[in-house]
Length: 507
Image (tube, rainbow, N blue to C red; front, side, top):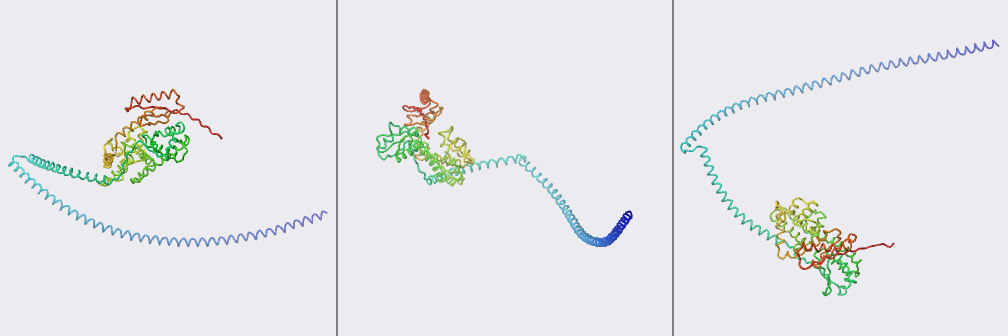
């Protein structure tokens, strides 16, 4: 057993020895291969280094040659520049020498001139002394006398020329002004319309009068209350007369009545609806008239609110003259005058058209129509020359532009046409406006209308602010103020209307 184990151990040792020897030979073989590869790599590196050195030397030699070539070129360029500078320097030296010689010559001539000047001065001095001795006057005294004589002669000639020119200019200017104005007025064809304070509505038959009056007069009362216009129904066949100083109210009432007659349904509710529709149509009419005026005058770029305000002048009169027609006429005349004398036609026409724009709002706002017109023009972006012409057309300020003067002239021509204006109508309308102004100064007034040619004022109050006693007191107060502040013929009746409505909707 022991021998077997020994044999096994010997065999194991031998096997191990064989394995080790085999492994050792492999290691040696691997080391020899590594050594060979290392040697091969070293040889390759040596070859690469050698090639790199050769290439670097070649590139260095090439760079040196290039640098040498560039240096030669620079030296040649510097040599050329140096030659040019030397040549220019020689030329400058020659010019300096030339200028020096000319300067010397000029100095010699200046010295000669100074000598001659001194010689001439001495001669003049001697002659002056001789003249002073002969005349017995000093040079200053003689000069003063001569200038005074020349001044007097010139003054006389100047005054003579001024007088002759003034007379000539006055004669020519008067003739020219007459010619321009007559030519302009002949070219201007503006329809003159004298407005009244009544309108007539034709009826299909006399039976319609009863329907307009309504049961117990409720229809006519509703119409008069809503429009502020008096309906006069008398024996005139197939006609109803509408009386009121405000043309817009009369037109609304007329349009309302015509619509009701065509429709046939005449009762308070229908009347109220028709009045609202009529007001809307009149607003459109106002816009249409303003737009037509602007197009007729060829005025461009006018603000829409100014166009609408201008259209309101269609229903505004001044001393019986339609203000919109008057404004169009003033614009046309001012434009033609500007064309005749070479002024700005566009500015003259625009200012003439807008000169009375304040009259569209002077019944509802405080201030003169000039102040209100200036405010409107400024608010809606009109140019300063337009605003100035509006402000100066009644001499509130001095007109400092030719166009402003032309607007004044055109305004006077338009207003001065025979039959264009009536003073009594304007005074009458102002009295009616004053009556409404007094009424509207109280709180709680809903509407007020001066009717019956100013013999009655109707006041519609807010029902929640007035009871019966307050309504009676308001009537007395208004009547007292009218007595104190106005002059008028006859009597004025003050009527206060207090209406309370309740509306419910059944669903």
